[in-house]
Image 1 (cartoon, rainbow, N blue to C red):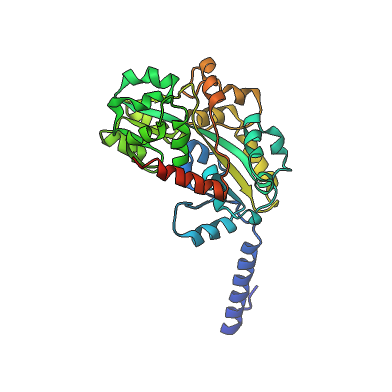
Image 2: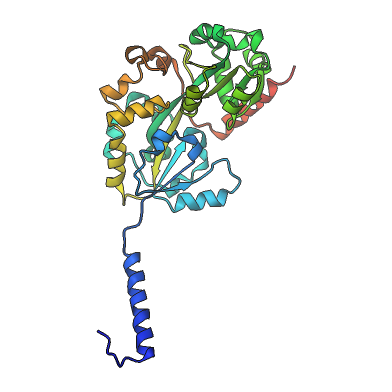
Length: 332
């Protein structure tokens, strides 16, 4: 207790000591787990599963502010990324994750994809979701049946200049290879209204476009509010987008494992699937979600999943060859 005769200087000194004690106490509190992610890649049902006491650090792989991205990633415990941006990551900054118990729970589809990566990437990437691309058709119910069986319908004359494609030559090339027509890539590109990854559904709804090819996880909310839109997955298969988790340290392993295991809760799983997000884990209930005919859900059929394809990381030489092939297809 202070003496009633304490001097002003003694009182101020005591105040300083109290402040230092408070600051030191705060610094000793456990740091929040930080996870870096690009919000636009993930449906709300997935983001809602991230523990509330974790801090979500926003990153943007398409941003020119590369240093800001690097700082956010370097200051985070975990990072979420899709397969299109694997080459943008400095893997030396991350720890091996292939020894986690979670790895033993991966299904064959995700194990096969990891097998296509080099050893350094494979050791540090944990598959956490796979999203199929889908075809959204607007006001053209007569196209639905043909779209369900084959990608050939994209060459229909009524779709000339009315298709919105992803801004990815690799995806478009892969689809053209499914079409049973000569010069299919050139013909497919002549059908395009535009190539867009960010606003494809806004364009579809608010323009004369009739078809858009988009990741399933990005279109669920539009299907609910616009009855003109129909969802189709060709039995020939669709491109797949993979999502991965990387860890910068082993400090929060237990928290990470607890979160990943919580995703297998049936109510959470149902919400994820309803928004186009599939968990690549090996359990009967999870795998049943890849068989839409049985459970009468709107996702890809078992045949579609069987015929779907992923995109392994390209070497620099392969990137150059793809770029050259793409430009050559533009010439008459």
